[in-house]
Image (cartoon, rainbow, N blue to C red):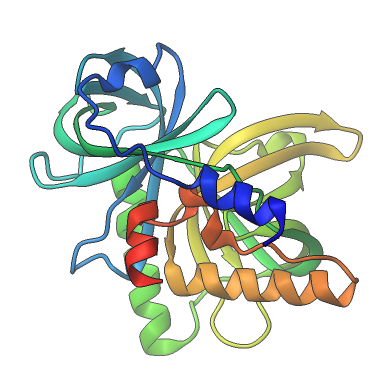
Amino acid sequence: MPDNHLSSRVAEMSINSKISDYSRYFSLRQKVYLVKMSTEQSSEIYESLSGIVTSSGLDKLELMVSYSAVDDEVGSATYKLTTEVFGSGIQVLGDLTGIVDGNIFQFCMRGTLEMFQRRSVSRAEFSTPFFHLRGNFPLASFKKEWKRVMDHLAKNATLPGLALRETVINLGAGGLGITVDESKRPTPISMFFIGLNEGLPVCALAETVWEQSVPEGFRCGFRFIHILKADQERIDSCVSSLILKSGGTHLDYKRNWVLVDKMVADGRKSG
């Protein structure tokens, strides 16, 4: 067995000892990704947020997200909380116990804390039909509009008034990068429509994660936070095809634990 494969498997081993103090892995102002764990009603959708640690205790954690999100059901929603510690990824389950002021999420952590090797996601830059919808609206409003759009597309295959323009994008299963005019700087959340080969356009919500001035305008990076899992697959398939045609190597996005609503142990059970 190759050494790099062995190190990969070792890096994805769980910490099997009982964790009584999770706070040692979460420090103030540390960035954490929140991945909503699927229920029977949401098994087809990947949902995620990102937050900054504002408080941590033995099994308690408070995270501040950069936009209001009050539509979650306190007491019933569970997230996978994933972050980086000493160069390795960690993740643990957290039950949502409260939301303060719309954007302070309170969690009670439980179960095994898993460590894993952080992995890149394959990306490709190409031109495709594209539309970017900006707006300073709450996440709940964006999610409501996303559902309306998806329901309409499923019934009619088209969306009246939607005109996709050929645009160069840098795309991967986890998000995208585009260059925009200085006057069209992105809002915290955006809705994107992406034409991919045949079939309906991908419709996804994404959060802005970085911005940079460039000679052509304003370069922006976005992370998908609400997207059909089937569309994650479509994006990955498209990117894989482009990479392999150019002689590159494709990396499976499902080995990046931020992009799946499973724990490492779940993957082993189904493997």
